[in-house]
Length: 466
Image 1: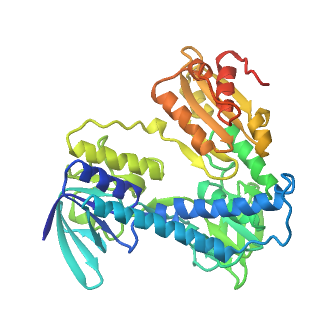
Image 2 (image 1 turned 180 degrees about the vertical axis):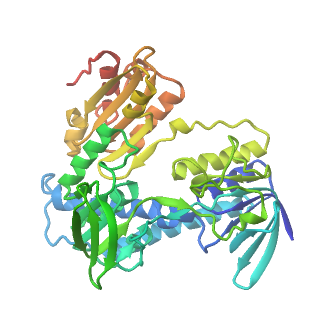
Image 3 (image 1 turned 90 degrees about the horizontal axis):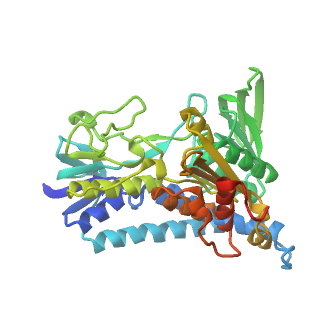
């Protein structure tokens, strides 16, 4: 039996970052990973590969629709999906190898195999016929999540696929159905829409990305419709059937009328669910809630004080950066420090183009809270930088307390919104007012000027350039 100060199960963003911070703090650390490659869902079949394909498809889309306007002329344009997939695999491999390098550099011992609890301190790792017993003074569960689905839409991984299969198709479909108007469905739908696929999104709710501020959700819907997306809102999927070279989807609309749709593939993207299979938590006192999440306290401790859990397997948004922050939090808590983690200021991003991003409360949430508020906004098309790059869709929206002017939420759809949102996160972390942001000098010409202008509009209704 090998003994460790900290034993971590799962090498996704929550697990491997927790391991790195534990090692930095002087703990003898080990990490257990079920698969051969480190990095978990995010690096292997999630964040990184999807962004690689999004970038490749965006280059193709621009070449097809924008290059001529820029004075770039050529002929014979075509999309090579196999080369795109190969480049994506190279990016994934490089990133995963980078994590392996960091494990070696920080003297973190890596075990490959399926981990299951023997008791509150001991874990069995099975890799084929090889078995090893590991003991951890502290144990961190970071096993992440897996694609979710409901009755009637069970993936067969051939024509009815999850995000994992969508990242490695060998052809560009003529038509694709996407069940779910959330982040995963919209991002992967964007990849194939840019390459020429007809995308139809079937969504049970009345809008895409229900967690987004309604203003941003509506604007993003407009953008995606221009790209050719079709939306079937308030449709309840009854069944999806593999018909050989086609799939057939049957749904009921809000009038309870049957709607039948056909396509080459159906992507099931109705969220993800916590992954705790094979952990044998019954051998511990760790508890699960009704959603299958591991119950933790404010310090991310389970019902067993020496066992912690982070990332998608606990409550909160299923975001890689949220998992990373929780991994660091637990490492520092174990070390006796007093770490800080503000869940209200964890930004969310949708990597369409333009990107959508948000932090803090939505207008709908503020209305429900009864807090007096004011709103400022600014259209991206009014920016000189946006006109220069031909990225004129979107807006920035800032919500502040009407009495104190403290910023309560920032929501945007804009080019590079994933980067722009961090200005809002920093400002809100220090409880900035809309006037504070408005009085900060922003470089010209940049997309970030829209944040300043929205703040001016929020502060005293006097944006300069509109």
